[in-house]
Length: 294
Image (cartoon, rainbow, N blue to C red; front, side, top):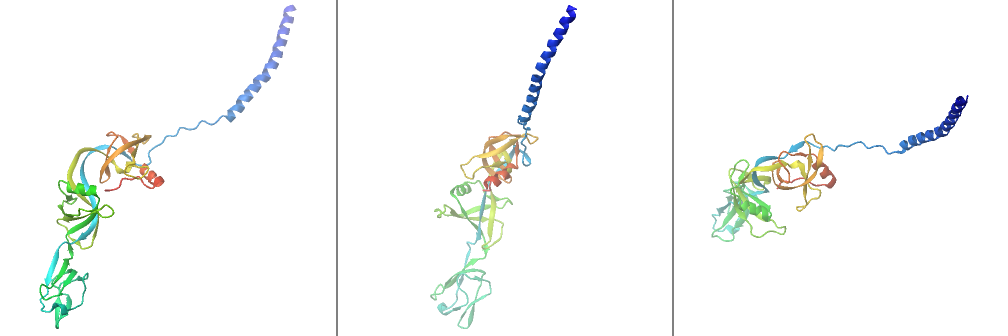
């Protein structure tokens, strides 16, 4: 009986203890669930990828060049003598600056027509005396490209081994001013063999090969490089990625001259991958950033 009594007493106190502990455990569980509701969600892992086509840095034989723009002019002048005793009494139908054609009647001299013997731009009428009276006519067929260029471009042109167009036509320097204009530009005339152009016709971005070829130059697609701010002294960047397009990071690079869609670079390694689409993002954000032609 004593044993049974002791067991009942122990069971009694065990029930009492359970009744005391159970609410505390329930409160702890409820508090834990409530705290989970206030925990911030774990952010998902974001993988940044390329915006455009992936391009590799590679080796290439690069031909040096420069690009010029200008107007086709003519340095060829034609002189037509006026076979008249009294040329100052000629009644002219044209004035200097007019375009004339061979066979055109230019004026009348004592009931006789003064006829143009050449086509071109009438630059001067020298008929003030009977001796050496003449017309000065500029040929309409242009034979020189007149350009404006800065000192560095002019120096590169003068120091070129040879000058040729991409089609292989030889180019020579006919004239270069020694004094720049107010914008620091020099007037230059270039003779281009094997070409025919109209006087006054404009030429944009004519590529002239200098004869210098850089072997195994490290190049990258020009769409992969960009500036965050425009300016000659501002740094250039490229967005380096893995072969699957995953972003590795932005790196600062150095660039050289451009040929076609390639630009010579340093600060990268051959075979590394780069994003060609981020340049457009930079241009949209900053309004600049691309590699321009020379």
